[in-house]
Length: 356
Image 1 (spheres, rainbow, N blue to C red):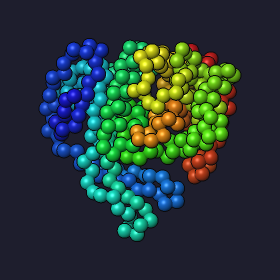
Image 2 (cartoon, rainbow, N blue to C red):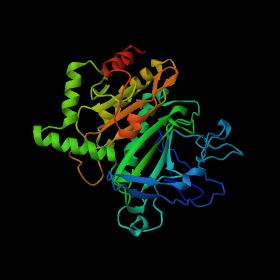
Image 3 (cartoon, rainbow, N blue to C red):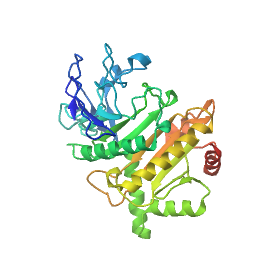
Image 4 (cartoon, rainbow, N blue to C red):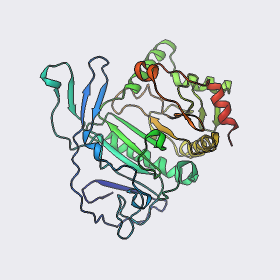
């Protein structure tokens, strides 16, 4: 681990273990001043984050000024080295950070809305130094290195004060809202357990109490037996369209063994994930004969509780419902969280299986 000019950590993951990274960040950067705050909605019980300092974050820079490319003479970037395989660094515009000032309180001192500093951690993961690359075009070896980075950082963030859940994810494409086109993802260390995870744990707990088995294990077994929604099946992973898919493209990639998080995967499971996931991504890009905009994120167990209920899996979804049409989250979805899909899960799966 090394440090950038403002003191943030930067960690290199290389194919050659003995390779040393010695380049120094020569930029004149002021210290990061995060002012993150979390507030709990009194009507839903869900935590909401406020991070007003992110308004000034980098927005769609030209390719020759990309902050995620390796540094070049006269054009220093977030990565001081002239090249890298995979690199992780602390986000300069984090939604959550360790040095956020303040103490827990309530809004307006009325006691209805608890509030607290957003103390946790956010990191950026660059999947390749190739600005024009894509995760779908990485080699299996490179994907395996990314998995190692995810595992390492998940374990490290789980030891970070204030972090309750670790969420590695990738946003891809302008339609998703991406403002940096270089292939990269992020890792959020949340200071709370996310609302979606809380709901999934509630369902998992009730299912175990009634059936004595994990719900995702039974879903996985049913999907593998039916095959109607399976996209890719490997030795240790199966990718399928969820039977109640919300999005026009929606895939879950699930390990055959119940594990709580990425660090718990074996070497063979990590290898097989690289093969299965690349197959899924390449089918996604072939679906409309264009790069698919998507969000892909890992569902991992909370750091400190309910780890026996969770079943690690990756979820990928896209807002693109045809080559040139987007699915907008309108009244029903945005207002009431009631989803209406324009295609059945079986149709989505058939289209992805046919995409080559």
